[in-house]
Amino acid sequence: MNNINDNYFDGYYKDIWRALIPAELTSKEVDFMLNYFKLGKGSRVLDIMCGYGRHAIELAKRGLEVTAVDNLEAYIEEINKAAKINSLSLEATQADVLQYKINKQFDLALCMGNSLNFFNGEDVHRLLVNVHDHLDNDGHLLINTWSLAEIAIRNFTPRAWDELNGIKHICESGYFFHPTRVEFESTFLSADGGVEKKKAVDYIFSVAEMETLLNKAGFLLKKIYSIPGKKEFGLGDPRAYIIASKD
Image (cartoon, rainbow, N blue to C red; front, side, top):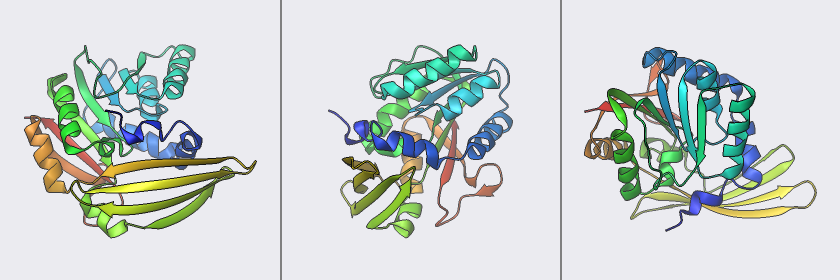
């Protein structure tokens, strides 16, 4: 069954997403990964739903061996081009992450940019089990999300709009239950008159539900930060970085 989020990034939002993330944030997140997980040259990292490769490319530039997976062909082509130009130890593959056959073992797996919340609980479990089975015994998982219930409930906005790079984005949202989720209807208006309409969904898990999902897949929740390595997560913080280890 196709995921409604599969095609959200293949239009205007592909470039909007890139413009939303400052390069400084990527650098700080990678610095945290290297220090916290004691990674060095030759360490192996799996970047699930890697997007345009902001972490994958930066980690590979630091000397790590990176495997990156995303469903969007344009992103994967861009990453592989960057890897070739810079002679990086980086392999990017276009695939449905729920069907992706992992054939290596890793020191760290990443699931950043709220992408784990594109999936319902059943699919999250499938994904986590697959990742767990391909981490070394002392390996870790890092999840970045802003769709924990402790974030989403306090920050839910039924209608919002913004403009970036000459594209207006109007978003209408609904908060639903069974399963708990936020459904989005987005309209993108370009300066040249182009119109694009997209739907998406973020599944909402509380901290307790997320811990249960991790435990069922064989992980142990270790820490949740709102600022990696500096501030532990608290109610209403705008984002969370969840760290789990193999149990």
